[in-house]
Image (cartoon, rainbow, N blue to C red; front, side, top):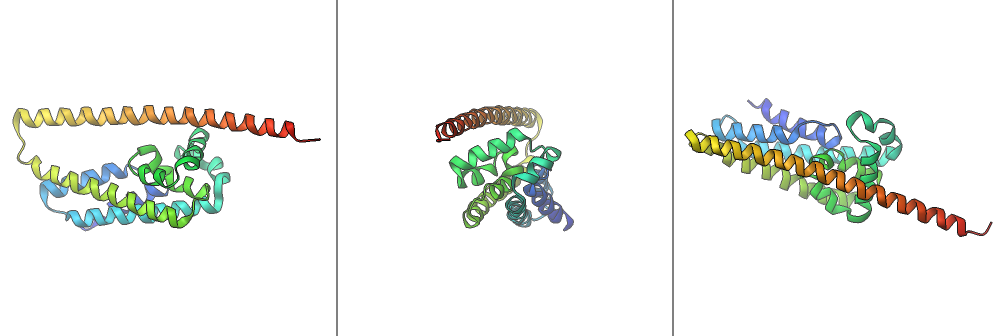
Length: 211
């Protein structure tokens, strides 16, 4: 069973480095399993997830910092980091910085790419480390312990009440996915508009320069 902690930590670490892996689902599944069977210790699940998140994000930050937008533009498509998402990342970091790093932990799209984008945008490492650690603790620890408590109650829920709760849970999950997708589209559109405005301002500035 001790391998379960390693699976949680490694999955979270690799997702935080920029690979599209189901880290959130792994934390939830492991915590539910711990709460309903007690074969795993929730404190070690939470610790593995937090350490994986912090380590993975720092590796992702270093990759983005040293290789910048060049490697992201060249290879980003392979892991879902499209040109629109690169533009979205630059737009968000330019305006919100550390808040993006913290809240990015809780948004599926940003969570995978936030460290790479932070490094590529040259965000100061000490600021990144603080918001990254804070986000990792709240996200991984929060999901682990809340889901664990839910898992402890699963054994007690039977019959129509259990079915109704399961239906509500599925509906909430679908609603969350739709919400995230819509907001990604909205933010991407805003980033594209901002990029067009910046380009027009730059062209106007160049035109006004004396020849």
